[in-house]
Amino acid sequence: MSGLNWKPFVYGGLASIVAEFGTFPVDLTKTRLQVQGQSIDVRFKEIKYRGMFHALFRIYREEGILALYSGIAPALLRQASYGTIKIGIYQSLKRLFVERLEDETLLINMICGVVSGVISSTIANPTDVLKIRMQAQGSLFQGSMIGSFIDIYQQEGTRGLWRGVVPTAQRAAIVVGVELPVYDITKKHLIVSGMLGDTILTHFVSSFTCGLAGALASNPVDVVRTRMMNQRAIVGHVDLYKGTLDGILKMWKHEGFFALYKGFWPNWLRLGPWNIIFFITYEQLKRLQI
Figure 1 (cartoon, helix red, strand yellow):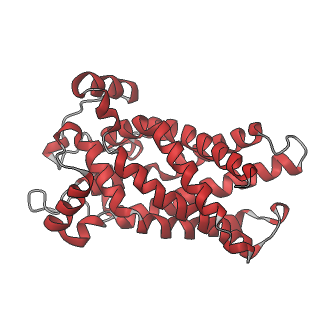
Figure 2 (cartoon, rainbow, N blue to C red; figure 1 turned 90 degrees about the vertical axis):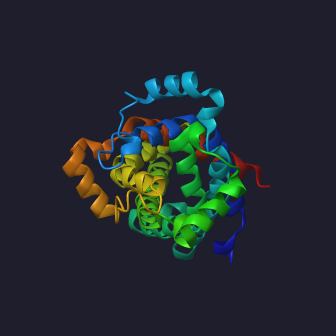
């Protein structure tokens, strides 16, 4: 029954919360950069931010320091659910296939990552919707977290809470299916080869590598997901994006190929530190053997 160990669930949730809080302002700038410049949504047509640091400075100057943490409550709630389920299912599924680190393969880890990413992101989608809207709209967003959930449900129904769930699940499948296997395989080879032991340096190198791989693989889907979650049920009586492929094609047509990589630097600069903080915290919690 070792495959049903509860510890990965708890460690994954705690480490996810620590990593989320530490990197949240960078995630906020990524969201703002991704939603701006939409020729088919006049609310976000203006190009206000030239890059991550410009966005950080301008948001701080115009909206105050607390605006850099707009959406932190649903973000932490999301990690408490998403991170817990993601890591718990991933580690449990792996143990059903193999018992030892040395026996793990990239294919097995990728399958486990995709499955855990889809399940966890689908369950946690309502918290992601609220986080995205609070980040995108900043000081214009009104209401408490619970009240906002109720407002979305009343105005848009259950579908509103699960708006963007398909691209969210697709992104999670890509991110988790890339990041966790890359981390595990990199860590495995560093340890088995004798280059490094099971140390913080090994965890740092492995988490840095998986963060870069995840950002490159997921950014186009992430941009579409962000815009779909930010749009309301009706925007000028037109659904801006009907799905991931539709969103990618429309963005490419109206804004060019590089629009698919809007927010890449803050995406990577967030995923990199996020994964470093997460995995180092996670590995240390494992050693504590609580």
